[in-house]
Amino acid sequence: MIRKAMSAAAVLALAACSPATQSTAPTPSPPAASSAAPAPAGFTRTALAGLPAEPYELTVTSVERQGEHSLLRMEIIPKADDENTSGQGAFSGITDDDFSRFSLMDTVGGKVYRPLLEKKDGKAYGTRREFFLYSDVRYPVEVYFPGLPEDLKEITVVAPGALGEFAGVPVGDSEPGPPPAPTEKDGDPVPGDVVRFPVEQPGGTPYVQIEDLRELVESPQRSTRDDGETETIALRSDVLFAFDKASLTARARSVLDEVAEETRRRADPAKPPVAIVGHTDGKGSDAYNLPLSLRRARAVQAYLEARLGSDYVYRAGGRGAAEPVAPNEVDGKDNPDGRARNRRVEISYSIKQETAGSAGTTTTTPERGGIADSAFHEDDGEVVTSFERRARATTLRVDVHPFYRDGAYLVGVFDVTNTGDGDHNSAFTPFGSIMHRWSSSADFAQFTVVDPESGARYFGVRIGEEDHAEGRLLFLKPTMKNRVFVYYPAPPDGVTSVTLDAGDDGVHEEIPIR
Image (cartoon, rainbow, N blue to C red; front, side, top):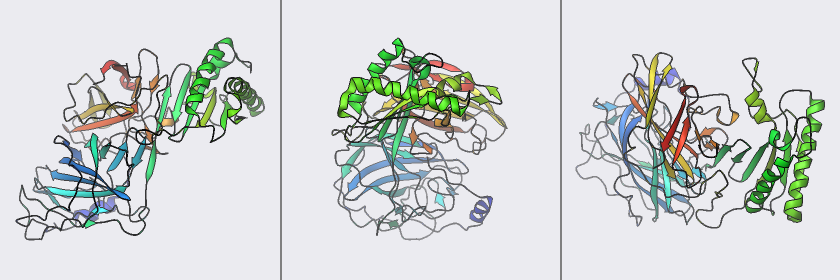
């Protein structure tokens, strides 16, 4: 989710605002004509959002292609105990009146579509809300997005806070038209009323944000990183070479045969090169590590070139210890696991673009599954296992629900409940970790998934360079429950249960996949 900072001054300024006078007319204006079918019944969830965290009921009505842009239609109903709520930070930045914190995620094509903005860091096109929202009043909301691929049939709507992911929403087509008229003001609305706010339609040249879903899978012999347009296979040097050597071992040949076949399937020879880069750990000097890493890269290049032939352009390089993927030391002490991950040879190439589906790049690999049907789960299922974590001023209990597949990904589902006496401050990330560079900025970096059969480890999916495909842990008062999701690369299709490695909170086996 996109994070937007909030200053104390902004909160105080907002608190001083007077209530809005938006209310309903007896008969709300009808929506613009649309040929798109509405989303089937059941795309509804009630969960926390905003600061302070308060409950909202969200129903996804439809996702529609409209020429150069797309339109998300929803209905939001505040469920707070108070008569009204400011909804601070629930759907946009803390001082904004738009709905910029929604996104559309193509879980087959591996893309995330952000709302169209008036300009970079500007407001999102769509509904412009007033400051106060009233409990049990129905608020239709529209948000505009970039155009979606014509062959895309379903998409996942990602809502802010604990409202989370709505998988399998049908994508229809409709003609652009004028937005519904806003509701006339005539006193405060009452529960059950429908209140429409003004809608700002796209104009000029909107700021477009489309990002790649990026994946990392590690196995005892290798890791595979999918960055959307490119893929990088990192082979452990301890598998390929003897200590201080640059000659391939007998074991390395079978590993490289598998990589050569995968490269033939996946790499696009029209977009050279196939880059082979050697890396070492932090032991030794640059004068030692740089030549060793280059010799090892050239040995791998020679083997792959002999298997793949002249259809590809190859380029070898050595980086020594300059680009670690894990800390060589932790708290001033040697970190053998981190150094082992850093000793590697990486093979990178541009991925062939698929012609079916939604122009995605997702393909089955030894550690990855294929494409599964997407479906929204209104009921998260029974709790499989639970554990508790002391988090500064309070205690948090994590309830783990069955996981499920969404397109090319596996979705982890958790409830985090404040079971202590103090508040949980959302500025703290008790389940984060800096131990792995891939997920060092993720709120749930400690949660990784392991295939018990192959030993492959699946890290949380990244969005672009900095964001992560996961829910957010909100400011929680005692007894509050925060639903959380985390997207992972999907394991092979035959895998029906996985192991959750929760880091400091232990290893939890046999988490079923629905």
